[in-house]
Image (cartoon, rainbow, N blue to C red; front, side, top):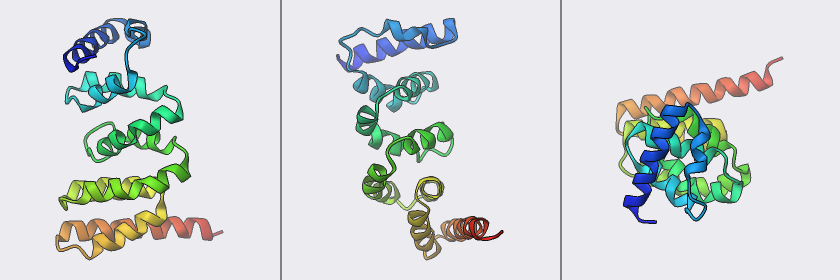
Length: 170
């Protein structure tokens, strides 16, 4: 299916979703459609309704298909004003060991530009799914040349220390 055809299908799905108020649009997807490609296209579009359709489609995938979309969801995890709760839960729904084996290169690629929002979002994601990795990133952030990123690292370390105290304290 061409990109143009995917976008046209997403338009029909969005209109159906808005008109019918629910996932009745799933029946509009032709059986021969590559759902992963359609979801990738929907997630890459900046229009909220298309992205919402992609998220709804992704929610029902089997783990093997979810694994294919992991890089796409890691990119969504950096969007401070996006559907961050859904994205974090979606990533956390994957087998933990599988995620932990693969997450580091994605985090490093996201942090390559040394942006405040990227550090913020990656620290929060890692705090939820891999506190040990979050602690390492917080330490790295504390040594950053940007004082705002250093503060993020300090705050993350405080949250992580508080979490440990909650576990240890009676």
